[in-house]
Amino acid sequence: MEVEVVEEQEKRKSIKMKRSNKNEKTSSSSAPINNLDDGCLMHIFSFLSPIPDRYNTALVCHRWLYLACHPQLWLRVDRSVKDLSEPGVFPNIEEAVSAARPGDTILIAAGGSHLASNILIRKPLCLIGGGEVPDETTLFCLRGSDSALEFLSTCKLTNLTVKAELGCCLLHRSGRLIIDECIIQCESNPLDHLSCPIVSTAGSGVFPSKVKSHSDSVSVSHTRIEGGAKAVLTSGDLTLQRVRVIYARTSLYFWFDVDCK
Image (cartoon, rainbow, N blue to C red; front, top):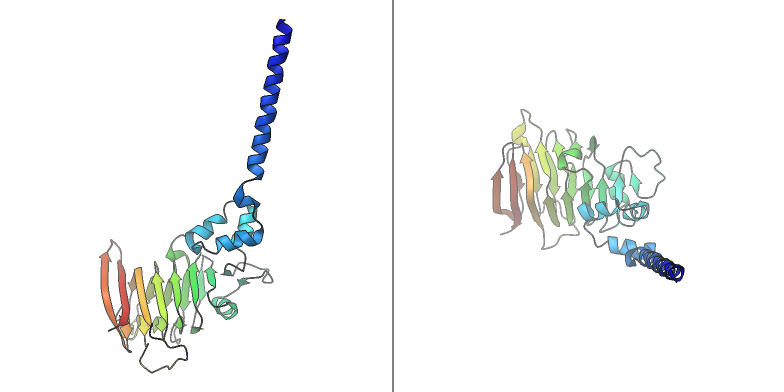
C-alpha cells in the first residue's frame, strides 16, 4: 500500500515538472517583441529617440545591436572603422551629410576631433554626439573657414561640442535650427571681437535660399556658449527672445530663441 502511494506521488511530481517546463518553453518562445521579424522591430525602433532610447536598445542582445545600428535608422561617422565598405558608416561628417536622406540621423562617434569646415546642410537632419557628454564628441573648425556648419534647412544638434578658431561655429541661413545640450565655443584669440558662436542671417537677403520659409528660427536649450563678442549675432529679420541663463560653477548654460519679431 505504501509503495503504491509513493509511486502515485512520484507520478504527480513528474507531471507537474513536465507542465512547468512546457509553460517555460511556451512563455519564452512566445515573447511578443522577440517573435517580430527584423523589419517590424526596426520600424518600432525608428519611433524611439536616438539618444538614449535607441542607443540603449543596442545593449539588449546581438540581434537588437544589429537592428538598432542599421543604416536604415541612422548613419554613423567613425574614423576608427577600417572597413568603410560597411553600409551607413563614413570617415567624416561631410561624406555622411552628402549621403544622408532628408530626415536621417547621423551619429558622430566619440573621441578625438572631427574636422568640420563650411559643411553645407540643405536637408532636414539630426546630428548627435555618440559620447555620454558633449565634451566627448568635438567638431573643430579651422581658421579661414566661415563656419563649421551652415544650415539652410531644419536641423537639430544634440550632445556635441563645436569649436571654431576664428569666425562662427554655426551659421544659420534658413529653416529651424534646434541646439540642445551642446557646447558652442569660439577659441580665445586677439581677434575675439570678430568671432561669434552662433550667427543667423535668416531673412537678411544676404544669401537668398530656395528653401526659405516663414518658420526660420533658432532654439537653444541647456547649452554652454563660450568666447566671441556675443553668444548670438543676428543680421536678418530674427531677434533674440525668451533668454534664460543659469550660472554653474564653471560655466554658463543658455536657453533662448531667435525668432521673428
